[in-house]
Image (tube, rainbow, N blue to C red; front, side):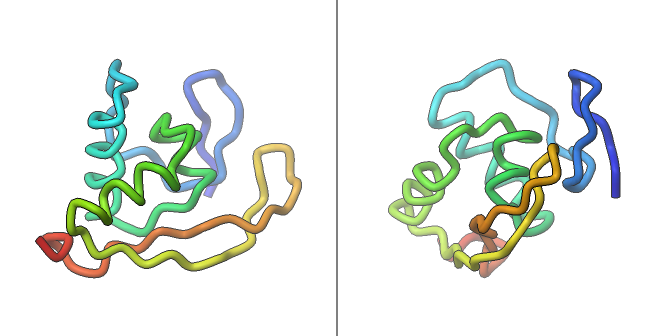
Length: 99
């Protein structure tokens, strides 16, 4: 699926169903990740590009410390420029996050 990001560049992730927040606080980033994780798994590239979470592994670690059950699976995904990378795919294991 091809969509475009807010800069007009193609985005190969799922269309954004989570509105971007103007806040870059860790709390706001965790909330954006949780909203998306409740819809579908999120990979590193999508978290950075669509959710504006530049360090998704840190936010996922914080969510796990809060009691959310999130699995990490390694996958290969191309970036916008087409280069293949091995990245993390985060999967929320229960709708309530195990809380």
